[in-house]
Image 1 (cartoon, helix red, strand yellow):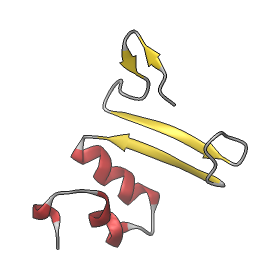
Image 2 (cartoon, one colour):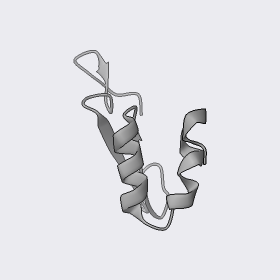
Image 3 (cartoon, rainbow, N blue to C red):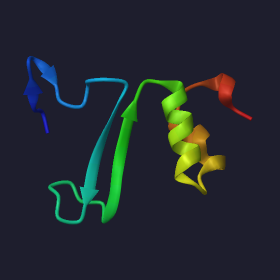
Length: 68
């Protein structure tokens, strides 16, 4: 929500960040959440570990070389 900590936007520390969007949060998605990363391995593992979205991973990146 635009929060800065030591002049860096919250959510930009480390290789990934996660945001909960449970039903009583400011941004509500029922029981959902968001994982943000620039790391290809973290992205791939998170899609595969989440289950039942293996065929949809290509929708979540901009890399032409990953297309089947």
